[in-house]
Length: 167
Image (cartoon, rainbow, N blue to C red; front, side, top):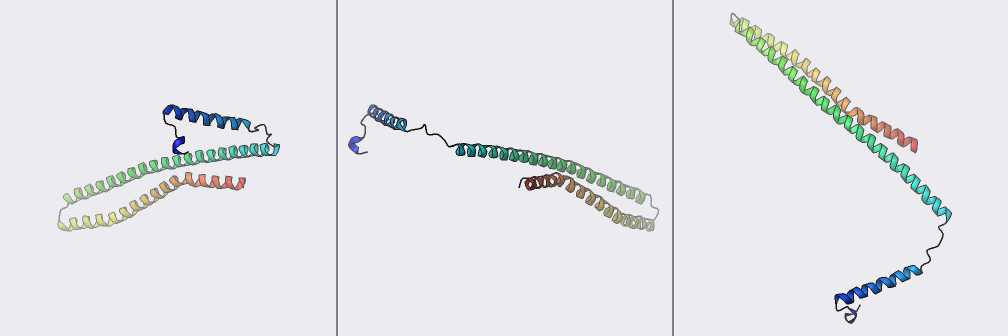
């Protein structure tokens, strides 16, 4: 559009746009839109829509199952953390009680030899106690890890089995 063809006022611009729209609408109206869509194209479109819907449903179901597995895993992790914290508190209480028992026994000792013997026996016992407590913690953390990962492992297995069946 050259400089001389440019509208000079807003009214001229509106008129120019209106003329252009009417011209385009007329050309569109002249198109022959009564052309029939071949049956094979319609059948292909219907089949594609059906397959897409089925794929969507499978994907949606899979996503919902995965979310459920994640929720179960997070719940198990939360329960495991609670159990772990309780175990740590329980072990700390046992160790404190043991320490207080030692202090009571040391306070009632009659001589230095008895104090040394009480202290030595306590240290020997504590090595065994700590080893046993480490075993308790290891067993608990192994269970927590298994409980936390089990829902996800089950979901992955189900997803792979489903994928194999649909292939």
